Amino acid sequence: MNRIKKLFPYLMVNVICFYLLTLLMKDTGSAMFILLFAIPVITFVNAIICGSKNSFDFLYPLLVMVIFVPYVLIYMNESATIYIFIYGAISLMGCFVGSRLR
Image (cartoon, rainbow, N blue to C red; front, side, top):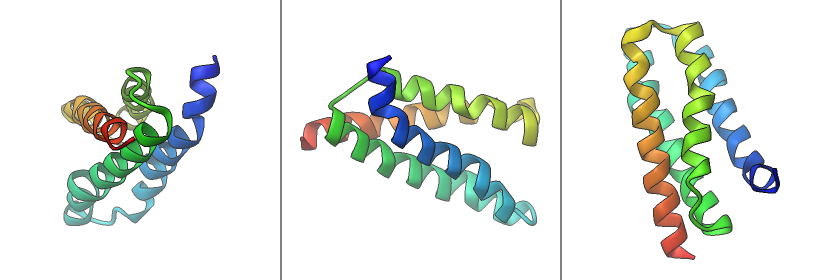
């Protein structure tokens, strides 16, 4: 439980990123920009900060993936489930880079 408390602020940034950026999607072009550029960049930078502050933790990328599952079920169809693993991999790499910068 203590590990999750340390990761909570970074996970909340991801929740805000995933669910509030959806409000900016007006058409297919803006949705693709958000899904393929904005969310990955924010997730990666957030993971670098998390990794540099808390060291490498496998729990963080797993929780990022869990947070994104309801987003896919609510706003998208099942063809977007690949993004769950993509954002998990991006957060894993960012967490690793951040832990090396420490």
